[in-house]
Image 1 (cartoon, rainbow, N blue to C red):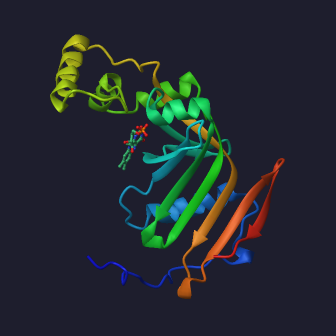
Image 2: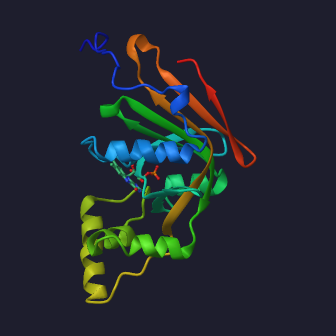
Length: 211
Ligand SMILES: Cc1cc2nc3c(=O)[nH]c(=O)nc-3n(C[C@H](O)[C@H](O)[C@H](O)COP(=O)(O)O)c2cc1C
């Protein structure tokens, strides 16, 4: 298969210095709003990169469920590979690629677990079916078969009857507190725009990076 000829020009937007908000969360909100209206499949899907204590990185997609002045929130199983890597090394990177807008946002920082209350709130916003899956799935562990998971799911449903599924302690949210956010806009001739916000105390320093 010959894929070396796959390439195209980027020309949908630009990041001018005089468009920049001093607060990157405002610019992120504006870009997210535009992504919501750009007919993007899963506009809140993002890559989460973590690393173990030896420095070996791993990455996977998770869904961004909330963002505010305190950071970016996602939910998962705390005993999963990502969960245990984050417990040992609480530094992570997030990457959102909105290809329809020729944009990426790269976010880095320290990660903290959300409060029990925040995790409960999000857990109970999920459907009964996906709450059961969260409760019965030993995420990232080897299982003997698909059948094993399906049997556990059905058993759990029978056990709870019409009672609610409580959030298991091993399941909840993380909040990434950004200390660096880069906004990337594709431009013609590969001369892309890259604007990096770096946290300096309470303020943000803004620099332009070469593409
Ligand atoms: C579109 C999409 C959304 C996903 N959202 C989540 C999520 O929000 N939380 C989660 O734990 N896994 C999510 N996953 C599954 C993860 O990519 C991954 O398979 C799982 O979390 C196990 O990762 P780990 O073994 O590295 O911990 C999603 C996968 C896709 C493709």
